[in-house]
Each structure stands twice: as structure tokens, then as C-alpha cells.
Length: 241
Image 1 (cartoon, rainbow, N blue to C red):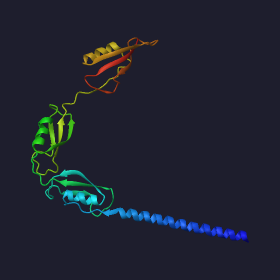
Image 2: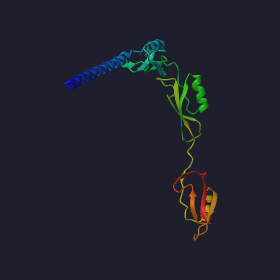
Image 3: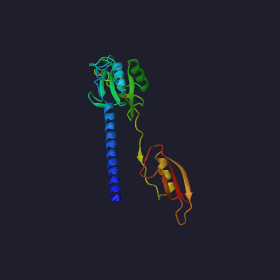
């Protein structure tokens, strides 16, 4: 009888301990949730605010304001926030980044004609007019290399979004290219005549001792057959000694 009482007491203690642990766990989860939600804020509207004021407001909320770009705008005055991300009303957490575009005010510049100029001259002209040169893409193009053949925005554009002009520059005409033929199995003397007549150079010719083979027959070649070669390609071979 005493053993049964002791078992019931142990069972009650175990049950009480389990209940207390469950309550403690539930309390911890609730505390964590309240803490997380307590750190969340509703994103205010920054668009239209002076950038300095927007920066102070976000700093007080524990947010980090990042300027992604500066753009011309007829809607917002200079140094006002023109766009923001996340948008107003979004739940944000302390330490989160807020990305904005800042207005430069209405465009007060005229994009010059840069096409036909060298890249250096185009950069100087852009800087003189308050512009910066952004992306410069070089493509094979007929005519002289290092000449501007395209620009964005175009000259005298009415709507200029940013003070940046991107350039398309001629890289000159693309050099001729050929597919390398297969010379393996042919006599080196014949192949040398063909290549030199076509204007190519023959470099190293390495003899390889092989029993039973015909001397001078090509075993390997470089560049490989089927590869793309230019007019300045130099060929090398291994031939039967």
C-alpha cells in the first residue's frame, strides 16, 4: 500500500512538472512574439519629403536610408525624395534598409551630340555640360575604332531622367576569322606550301619516331581542326620521323 502511494505521488509530481514546463515554454514563445512585433514599425511616406528630414525620421526608427540614384523630376523639387521602397504602410523591422531615389529638380541641361566624337572628347563634352558618362559598350563596327556611334539619351532629349549618358563605341571592324582545316594524315611539305601560300605561318614541326609509318606524315596539329582562327594564326605539328 505504501509503494502504491509513493507511485501516485511521483506521478503527480511528474504531471505537475510537465504542466509547469509547458506553461514556461508557452510564456517564452509569447514573449518572443511580442518582442518581435514590438520592434516592427509601419513604413512612413517619405516621397515629397526633404532628404535630410527623411534621413532623420528613418534613423529615429532604427532604419537605414540608402540613396540608390539621383534623378531629374518636374514633380519634386531638388533634394526631395522622389521614390521609395518599401512603400508607405509596409511593416519594417529595426535595421532594415530603405531605398530611395532623390530628385535633382527639373532638368536644366541639354544633352550634346556626342556621336562621331572620340571617347575622350565625348567625356570632356559631357562633363562640361554637367553630365557623367555611364556605361560604355564597345562593339565591332565599320570605320575607325574608339569613336562614339550611339548615345542614350539622344542629343537634345527633352526628357532626361538622370545626369548620365551611356555610349556605344566602335571597336573597329571585326578581324577575319576562318575554320581551321584538318591536316592530320597529310604530308607536312604539302601542308606547309598550302599554309604559306594562304599567308599563314608554320611554327614548330616536331618529329616523332614511329615504326612502320611514312616519314613526314602529320600526326597532330595546333590549332585543332574545326577551331576558329584569325589571319595571324601560327601552326605547329607533330610528324612521323
